[in-house]
Length: 160
Ligand SMILES: Nc1ccn([C@@H]2O[C@H](COP(=O)(O)O)[C@@H](O)[C@H]2O)c(=O)n1
Ligand SMILES: C[C@@]1(CO)OP(=O)(O)OP(=O)(O)OC[C@H]1O
Image 1 (cartoon, rainbow, N blue to C red):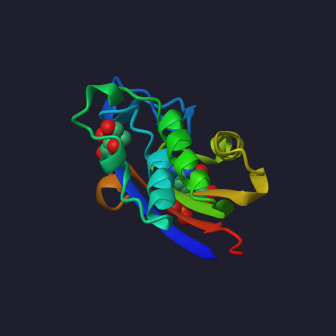
Image 2 (cartoon, rainbow, N blue to C red):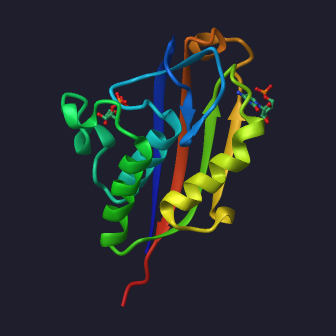
C-alpha cells in the first residue's frame, strides 16, 4: 500500500535569531522566528509525513501553546513523527522538498541537509532530495521577510 503526503510551512525572518534549515545552522544576518527553533524545512517534512498517515499536523502533536516545545530542536520533533510512521508499519519511498528563499543561498548546504535528514530518518541519502528556489524578489520571500518550504513524501508498506 502507498500513502502520499504534502507539507507547506512559512517562518518569519528576524534579526537576532539563528537560521536553522534542515537541522543545519546557516550563516545569515537574520534567522527564523517561531515557538520552536523554527526549522521551516523539517516542519514541512514532518507535516508531509503526518499527512501521509492521516495523523493531522505538527501543531496537533506539538502545540505552540505548550512550553515543552519552546525553542524545541525540530530534529527531535521529526524523529518523534517518524517513530509514529514506523509504528504504523510504513517505510519511506522518497522525500522531495523545496526551500523558497531569496537569501540565504542554500546550494552550499544542500548536501549536508540531505545527509542530516537521512540520518534523522535512518534512510539512504538517495531517498532524499532538497531543492531551493527564489521567488525572483517577489512577495514576502522575495523581500526576505520570511522563508517558505514545501515537501512531498511517499510511504509504502507490504500488506499480507
Ligand atoms: N535560496 C536559494 C535560492 C536558489 N538557489 C539556487 O539557485 C538556483 C536558481 O534559483 P532561481 O530562483 O533563480 O530559479 C536554484 O535552482 C538553486 O539551485 C539557492 O541555492 N538558494
Ligand atoms: C513546531 C511548533 C512547536 O510548538 O512551533 P513553531 O516553531 O511555531 O512552528 P510551526 O511551523 O508554526 O508549527 C507549530 C508547532 O508545532
